[in-house]
Length: 599
Image (cartoon, rainbow, N blue to C red; front, top):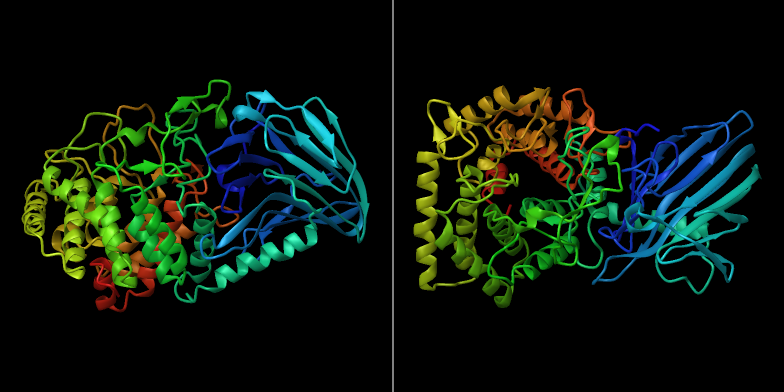
């Protein structure tokens, strides 16, 4: 069996876990009891032993699919010689409360309605636990099927039978008939769930959330859809944003660059918070900021954490073949053990934006944050592992130095806003100015004509495009204009598609274009005053979206999607780029945004 294109999958979420649905109707990825849990459906990573929830209509191998407007409800139309059926797939949600704005019903619903004629429907539920290592056995109790040793149960108005580890449901349905299969992954409801009401309520809940955004400017449809994706990747219990709901989708087909992305990274904390507030989702912005500060209690910050604020050990799963035979398959992420100083800048940047927008930062929260500004004032001159998590020795990465400057700068500005006049703030100012001077002296190579990846290197790095986006230099500074051009000359592998770097990172294979950086090129061009060029790049990148408007982490030069999917940072950078293009005619507003001026 061949592997479907990564970006052909539909993404479903109830903000507690997620499912990926292939173009043929098979749910090939699903983790319980939450995003980072056991992948009971993992055919995405192994066509033989990965579990699956299959749905097929005889005579129609692939339906026509779309999302219902402003929702994460998938609608699939199956047209056969004998009839037409409409299938709605969704993870059911309902309105919550202030502490948890969306409530997950912990139900994956597959609802089938026959519009005309007759159709032959087959549903097969074949979970495998321990990420595909073992099949399950089933029990039939109180009118439901329950999988042993995993919190899965199945309810349906259609009869089913168990063969081996699979529960199979078959039926012939006629025009006007509706049937449903419900897969629960929590406690059984006391009352039977009504699939029709679940569909209506889930649509209303997503649409009400989307309606809170009043953005009607540039790229409005893509922005609204990307905001939905980000909301779907935000964990309901803590507000943490996972990078993607998948693990080990390869950056190189058949290669070893396969990582677990079911964690919260901090590298774009400020952008997420600003995007949420700019799009009218202030409550989610608050929850995310509170999550960020909750993980600032230790002496040193890790670059990523789990959805509950903890990290786990990285390990390999040799029983899984990997997507398109890309091994190893990993769970856990060793990058949590790295030293990445850019993390401090991202968190302080988010805290400043939050205080400017709300004025709600407490003394206790500031006490936690200021300790980390102190850390950077002491350690800014040290090397680190860098934003791209190269698994090698520490170096003096220019992006890390810039983000250290951001940490100190935002710390100073927060101290001013909060009337903190302690002696440490003067020390922060001295360190901030020293970092700035050193980056300009050692991070820019006149011979290369650009800022470079590390001190003493001639290699380019697409993260250098963030220099004006955080206000380190004006976007039209000659050094930045030259850097933009050199990055495109050296790292562009297709129209608008930028690789992160070309330096040897110790791993075999050459990764694809990194879409986060590609959309950040748009923002850098806007701040450089090159709006038409930025618009052209944005339009080029828009054509790379998958058939359902979703983006992976990377693209091969031929447009093949690579890496974990859907990728939060890609959709976040798309929102940033579109909003900047929308403000391109107002340079004061743009500069205020880049400087976190509270605009």
